[in-house]
Image (cartoon, rainbow, N blue to C red):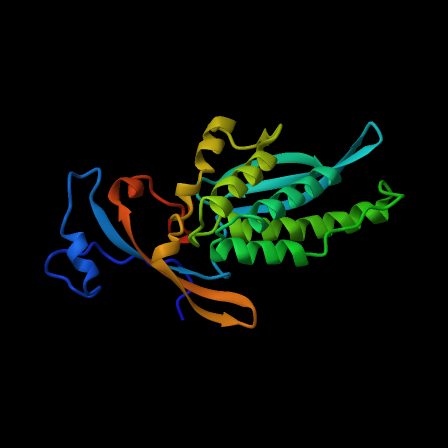
Length: 244
């Protein structure tokens, strides 16, 4: 079984593998508006192109902040950001509200909302700065970051909600007062590399269908839609194009 995102080649007048849909592909205006058919498979196992780990913690002013180390596999840029437990909790709540209450949710919204809702987020505790609590929170918050990247920075198609607003919330959290480790790079360049179009195509509700379930979890969604060639001009980060 395939485990990634597959893109079908452009459909020409001599190809009719998509049946009646091929007729629409023959009408191609100028280069900026030409359309191709692309088939995308959404799977929870897609590889994230950003890795995040909590590597340390700092205490200041009676508060504990958890140091997140980030690695962008597409550019090999590394950075760190320190966030408090309350900042993690606020992000979790905002993401959940974002994908839970949208009127027309895509399968990605549904799946992401369920994962966030069921995730055992560390509870608030009185002795929040004790070494034991800090260690427990570090482990749980690292798992929470894994949940974020497994949705946000994979090639699975996402709508303007889970791949737009939710993406921006996560990005802002990861770049707030960030410290860059990689030479010959900048925070502006890092921010420009963390944009939706570099990771996935936009989910098209009218051109997609759920292929199969595993229990109540969406296992695969097949999407066939017309994609402007201009939108493909910006290359995507994929495991096959990881910088070395």
